[in-house]
Length: 383
Figure: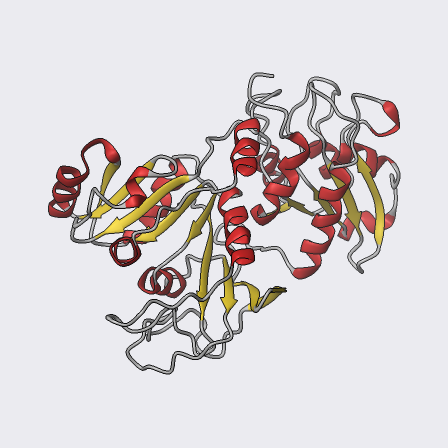
């Protein structure tokens, strides 16, 4: 079953605690600069999910706080806030909670009929309540969110939710902020609970980035290969896709075409070529087309990867051969992209599916979607 890219986000103490024990003063693990980073991540996602226990304990609002980020989402054809979701087994949800009165559309996943009826009675029209069965709760939740158009999901807690998703192999990325404090209490809530995890204790997550943010440190980990794709972005992929997104920002502006950057990299890590939309002043030129034209016939293409800030087109009106066909014809077997092409100009282009149908591995890295969309923020569906 298809599902979104799942990003787990949390701040913990040096000894892995999410907070102090119940009944004690709450612990502030983050800082203002990191709050702004979290806001940026929220703005890049299609939905944000929290467990019902976290709603009861923290009474969070969960919204995109920055007016500029909300405006950028709207300019990109998105609602100002991502969808907000929670999962409940009891249906015990307080309609007075701030979660229900701020931010975007709300979806509740209630486990079983009794929980659904209780949640629906409590919330009324504050949220859409969807019932899921007792078996395989999380695959049902993620599958339903995917059906709503959610491709990138941010999970903000709590520990039980994070534990279940990681243990079931349903998390793709972990963004963990480490605060320079020690809680030192065995009864304090922790990020992950006891149990068996995929790969066992010998399995090591892949560290793909670190960043100092004031007095806290952000660690970013990739957890595993995505089911159904057989591939995930590596640290090298992140560097090259960042280059492609930077190229997209250099494109001559247009109201009739996307701004896209592309880089072709050989198997040994050498850059073979790069290109961007409308390169050379030709309004019809696509980024992948421009880059591939510079290395036509190069023997290194057979093991190369194309990095594109937007999914290569599967259909186009300005050229007889879409970029997906050009990539396949060049003998390239791997493509890394930041975001899917919306139906703004050519509905149903489906470049990713066309590439995969030709046996080409396509790695989607939605953590770069915001960077890929930014040069196209002025374009909205229908323009």
